[in-house]
Image: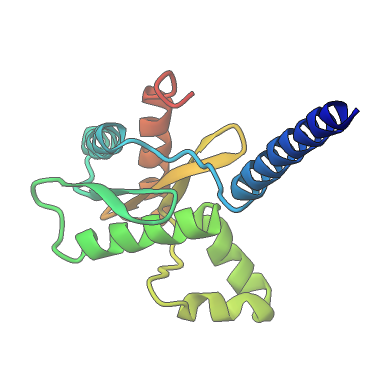
Length: 171
């Protein structure tokens, strides 16, 4: 009878050990997050396509592409684009990625809502049209910022053309 009690105790200890290990694995999984972000090669392609789209329309621009966290992955400056466009494009991309919204929408929100005006003072934000999030479904995986066309709506249109041209890669 003592042997049976010993075997039952061993089985219980093994079951508790397995349960504890599984609980630890579940806790570890809850402590981490898994996210998708745009790949560097795709970011460079998007920057190139954006500049090509604006060049075709007669605009010398700079396009910056950032990952979902706003870190610069690709920057392309067209011949003749102003020197200020590199920082402006990068800031628009950062603003769009970190807010997960087009910068044109943020600019409109600030104009119509005095409570939102403080967004313009967030370090690194540039609240001008021309920043567009890159999404897979509803998930933002990066953003494009464009500067140099004679209007932010034109910058934004070039970014949208680039996203459309690479839509098969962005799935």
